[in-house]
Amino acid sequence: MPELLTLSIERLGGLGDGMATHGGVTVVVPKSAAGDFLRVRVTARRQGALLAEIETVLAPGPGRAAAPCPHYAPHADHCGGCSLQHLSETAYREFKRTSLSEALRKAGFTAAPAEMVFLSAATRRRVTFTLLPRGEGGTQLSLLQSNSHRPVPVNACLLLTPALQAFLPGLHETLRGISLPASAGLQLTDTAHGIDLLFRLPAAAKPALFAPIAALPSAARVSVAWQDQLHIIAETVPVTMHLGAFDVKLPPGAFLQPTAEGQQRITDFVLRELAGCTRVADLFAGIGTYSLPLLAQARVHAFEGDAAMTAALRQAAKGETFRATRRDLFCNPLLPAELNAFDAAVINPPRAGARAQCGEIARSRVKRVAMVSCNPATFVRDATLLRQAGFRLQSALGLDQFTWSAHLEIIARFDRN
Image 1: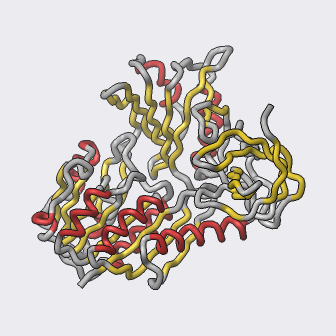
Image 2: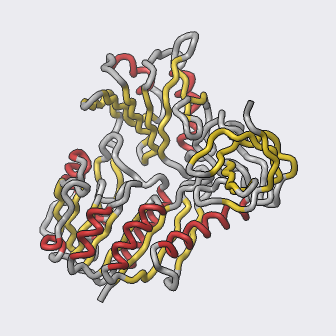
Image 3: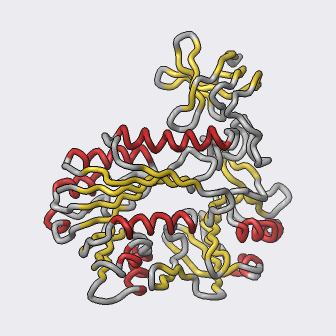
């Protein structure tokens, strides 16, 4: 029989989970708030701590609030897309501010100014659904449970842009008549031209199967990927992104910042903090989110590991002030002899961070780095490498574009003499 405990939540941990002490042992309780008095059910023991789920909220703490989404609940058997909807706005914002200050402190930086910016819900322009076969036939949109691969049927999401939210009912109804295999996925992206759809399938499927999807109002493009193959099934207009003075064709599934406002905030930071730099390396450049705007003030060499994004970037901007090179910076980072050609670098790695590349930057003569990180843990690791090489933090921006989650974007400028 599961062990039941009665306890009070003392604080929030780094991932937003409530932390309590029972009999001298730390108890971690997801979806709890500081001050909550709870009855919890122990589910596991991990690294000397107990993991528990809320059985009953005996008395809510001052930081608890009613969650706005019907797919969110205190228990683990609901959608895992959000983890902090139970927090009041005050408690939520304090958690994010603390996450930013703790990341900077752990990396060894305490004196530089740091601003925290909060974006509202209904701004996420991209979402990935798991497609769940219906018992009576057809397909159901679903998201995954927290810490699980178990799908939860959903028909709406409060995080998404109004255009995506308006698109979901028609998509949901159309999928009722289309049977797709288990393990299929669907990525939706809200673009200036309409909704871009990318189906990821475990095996090939006939293009005619997706004709009803392509006929939906606002569907700009429908693509299907299986194994290493990608096919564009239908495209009503070319799907592009406007970056700086350039239009870039958006490859299906290409990386984008999750919100348009967040992208603009980061771009403004990078342009401002690299003002005066004349030769810039853009590392993990994607489709040129920062490379192309930077061309208004510097010569830029972009490095990106994905072939389609590199090709799109090359096609968008050609000239003596710009180069784009395909390169896997995890396995083959730029070395000091190459980096020494630049006076500044922008680095925007995925959640795994860029330990190898930051180590080479540390050994180079690059004087200024603008780092864009979506993972405070790898930010700490990579920024520490820069600090140990003599870099000092000049300014930092915390950007909450992952609303109701523990994720945090950190953008920082580092200089050294």
